[in-house]
Image (cartoon, rainbow, N blue to C red):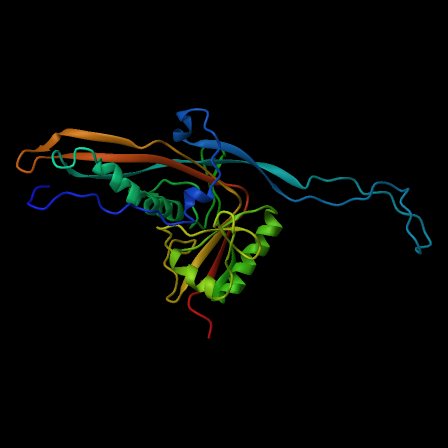
Length: 296
């Protein structure tokens, strides 16, 4: 960059809140092997109730308490897996004028949250379906060893309805199927609609957005609002999803320079900054179609 005007620093980049990485738990990796994919066991399902034995007194029945029924399995383990994907930024960087600034790393910082959200929603990296699990999915997928890489989203609301109905269905289904604090994934454009109906509350301590049921709202840049089959939502509506608790891994940023791309006429060289991610979730995978817009 050359010219008569002085070179200054631009404004600091501030990432949007309630992004995917911030919403995920971050287990300590045991090494770099997670980048080849991970496997874990989900214990999903339910529990039952029983009474202790025939010594329980039942008042007013006029009879004895029957023997307790035998205990049956209520839950089972499911081996699940997740694959990693890499986001990158690459362009031609000036070798003079900005000696203390790594332009490629700065470019990655500005774009990676969008690319991460897009890959996690659509399952596509580099234009190919290789990101598992992802949100917009309507079929199960197992690897050759029987590990469940992808679950089909359970659609709890297939026709566009009021956002209160959609959020209520997802909160209720999460409570039934998971029972713990999960995540509700919404496009950024849907936040105003949810706010207009008081369907979002913010934790005072950390600024985290939550549904009325207490589940975390993830509004990642890059979330498309597309349906489980990958098609765009009808005009005036958006698909939203819910999952059990999220976890994720990410690598450090790697910056590479390609000397063979040096352009003497412009004094530039190609640089690339990249980072690898992996995400997974527990048990529930739900979808609902909500109407966009303010109340009438």
